[in-house]
Length: 504
Image 1: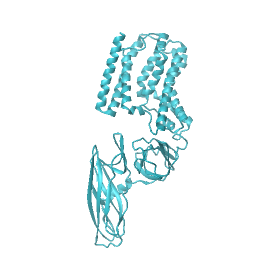
Image 2 (image 1 turned 180 degrees about the vertical axis):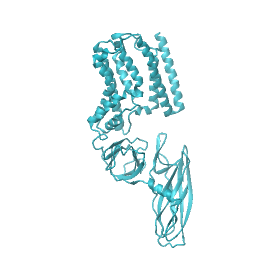
Image 3 (image 1 turned 90 degrees about the vertical axis):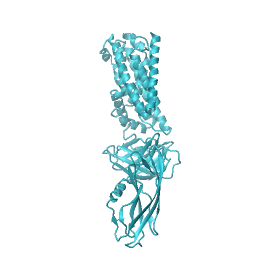
Image 4 (image 1 turned 90 degrees about the horizontal axis):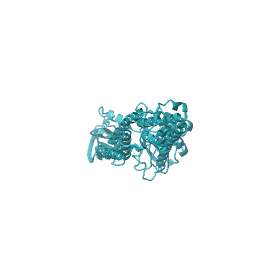
C-alpha cells in the first residue's frame, strides 16, 4: 500500500489528485465504500498544510466477491482510490508541499488481516504543475473505472421484500445489455447475496432488487454496472427516491403475453431434445413400446395421464417461484438443483430407476404384452413419468425458454402460471400427439421379447444421469458431500438387491 500523486510538482491553487494505491496478491481483496456482507472499507485521514483542502475518496466501481453464502463488494489485484487536493494559492515556487496520511484497511482471502500505515508525500512547488510520467497512467485508469453519472431516467420501488430498479432511455436494448448489477451505497438496504434478475427491452432495463434488513433511506443511491455484448463493463452512479414497484414497459421483458406463451410452448417442445431429459426419454420410449397393440382409449388415457403429470409439475414449479417471489426471495429456472440434498435424492432416484430397469427388482409385476401390459403400468406410472421428466429437465434450457421465463416472472401470477403451463404442454406434445393419433400408434412395433432387452439397455442412461448428478453434488459440497452420496448410493443398491431377492 502506497500513497501516490499524479504530479511530480504542484502549482499554487491548482488542484491535483493523490490516491491510496493498493496492490494485492492473487486471491486477496479489499473493500468498497459498502463492503457488502462483511468487511470494512479503507479509511484515509489526511493532514495538509494550512489553506489546503481535500475532497472525499472517489470510489472505482466495485466487483462482487462471493465468499460461501456471503457476497462482498470490493477490489482484487490492484486498485487506486483517488482524492482531489487543492493547495493554497499563497504558495510560491521553490517551496515544498507536504501531505501526511494515516490509513487503515482490511485485506482478506480465507482470513482477514487488518493493516494500517502512515505515509508522507512531499512535492516541490513550481509555477506550473508537472505530471508524473509513471503515475499519470494509473490515475487515468482509475478515472476510467469511476462511475459516471447515469444518463438514464431511474426509478426504484419496493413491494414487500421484492424490489426493482428501472432505467429508461436511449442505448438500452437486449443487444447492448448482457449483464447488469446494482451496488447499493448503503449496507443492509438490499440483500447483497440475493440474485438480481435482469430484463431488457428496447429503451428500458429492469433489475430485481431483493430487500435487506435495514430501513429504506429517503434516496436509494448506488452504482449500476452494465456489461455490453462485447464484454465491456461500464459503471454509472444514480440515486432515486423509493416508490411503487416499477414494471418493464410492455410487460415481461418486452414480450406480450401471446408471444411469451408461444415461446414457452416451443421451448418446452425443444426441451425434449436436451441432454438432461434423455434418461426420461428412455423411460417414455419404453412406455410407448408397452402401449403398442393396446386399445385406442387406453393409449389416449395414458397420454392424458402423462400430459397431466408434465403440466401440473410445471404449474407447481411456477407456483413455487411465485411463492418465493412473494416471500422476498428470488429464484430462477432449476433453482432446486442448487440444493445438495435435492441433488443427492435425485441421484439416488436415478440409480433406483436404473436398477429396476436392469431387473434387480420389479415394480408393477413382470413384463407382459399387449393391452394387459399397458394396463399393468397404470395411469399413476404415466403421471409419475411426466412429473419426473419435469424434475430432471430443470437443469437444462432450450431456445426461447430464457425470454419466456423472464417474461413469466414479470407478469401477474395468472400470466406466470399460464406461461409455465404452456411450457408443460410443449414438452408433453410429442407423447400426447402419439396418443391422440391412432394412425401413429399403429406404426409402433409389436410387443415381443425385444422389449425386455430394450428395458435393460435403457438402464444405462439412468446410471449416466446418476453419475452426472454426483458430479453436480461434488461441485456444491466437495469431497465430503460426494462421500455421503456414494454411501447413500450403496444403501440404495443394497435395498434394491434385498427387495429383488424377496420378490424372487
